[in-house]
Image 1: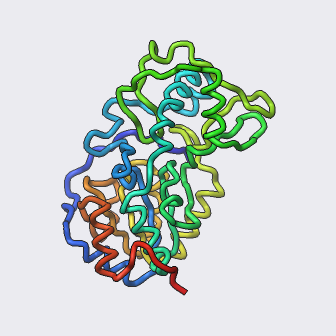
Image 2 (image 1 turned 180 degrees about the vertical axis):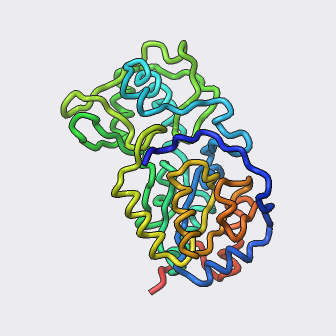
Image 3 (image 1 turned 90 degrees about the vertical axis):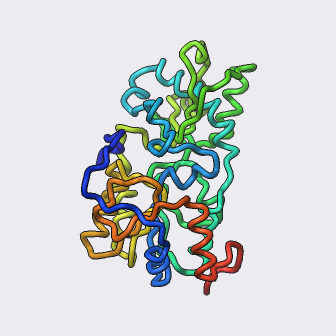
Length: 299
């Protein structure tokens, strides 16, 4: 269960073109029992870029791998320097209309659950409950030696203390909270150890080249098994960590509907791919289904 070995994917010929009709999405939501799977495109309207869409960061940025992070102190210095600067922007992101719509669908009993490939915590901030964070959450840090979990905010304060005045100008921002800095800008940035045991700290996310915890995968598989349909929002499905659930749903005869501006690796398994902006599309769906974006939960 290797995590994210595929960094790019080229659409093949023969895929059905996307549509702009929201009726296939309305149909599955009206039926209820919908499992939602979201990707980086869900958060672009909150100011967090995606990897593969238009202007996606993979065009200029190779994400940190687990192997590089654990093998090299210099790689960790570079990661934390860039991540520390990126957290100032990433940590201020707020839920957008898409997040609020998904939360509203959940409150009104239309969803069986939410799985997100994102690490930004915006689904929970937008009001969704019982979200499975497939790739973890950047708001937490974990010690690779003792397993202690801590707050990213607490770590940021510690890093500020030992790197007073560190404030380079980044060339850009990436979906993993990693700011684009040169090696010269990284300079002699100081990394702090685990406050409990002195071990190496890592964000509590699944890096490229790392395995998604098996128990998390099995929980998601069970969610697919219990759902009536699968609704994919803002994911290219390039990596197997998300695509496997699309394949599972399709093989079980459950409708798969995708809302994504660009072709995805899962299009062949879907009954439809709707290529509309997520925030506007989901807000329109809420209106059609008489689901207030703010209101009481269904009994």
